[in-house]
Length: 292
Image 1 (cartoon, helix red, strand yellow):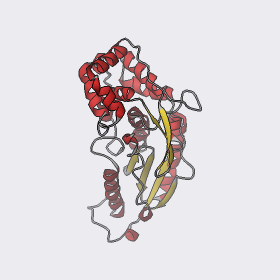
Image 2: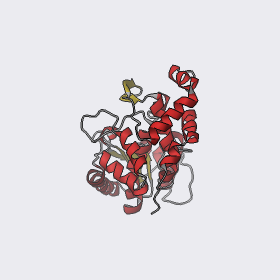
Image 3: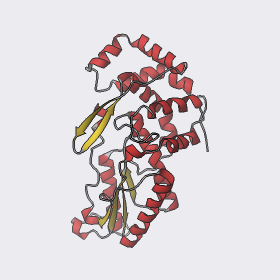
Image 4: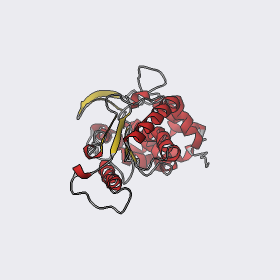
């Protein structure tokens, strides 16, 4: 397995911080905090670079608010300066992990998203309906045979274990300063239980959410060898012609989540249903978060 050392200087380079600034201000150019930072851009970026290089950087406490669209969620918004750091980190390490993600992980990735997930779901549905043969469009959903196991992880962002996450990151990243910086960011969040949870709203949280659940993806694809599986953040779905087989998969997944990731499935949101009723399993509730 290839590992990555000495990436911190690249992360702290003026060029990377300038690129991170441009990404952080995207669709926010009229915000007062962006205008203020941009007025003295070079000096602000140089000061940020110095803080990072000398490991004296400390993120500001995030601002939190409640968003009720489409469901109630607590959003944490980091200071703009800290958002630049989040982008700077992702600029450097995203490609290291993304190329190890499975094809059918659809949240917060280039060329993916809700619409791509729904299109792939429709493809899988038709494969099941045709028993893996050449695909033809079913005339109506009532003709579709098979079942879907739709699942949701209970309070996912609140329950991400920091130690497990850092151990996953350490498998690929050996640069101690990058690990120090990541640890600073994931701990800059008030939680009921110390050492757990990530703020819903940070770019880094969205990225680390995929890194963490890639462990589940790899288990599903390579240990259980499940063919028709898709995941969007903490929602996932498995399609199969056999209801009994899906029940067995559920048992294995529950065991893996509890023992390896310290997570559990949401009891009210996990069910095995006829395939023709399984449409619309994803919505865009997470897509609005990046606007804050």
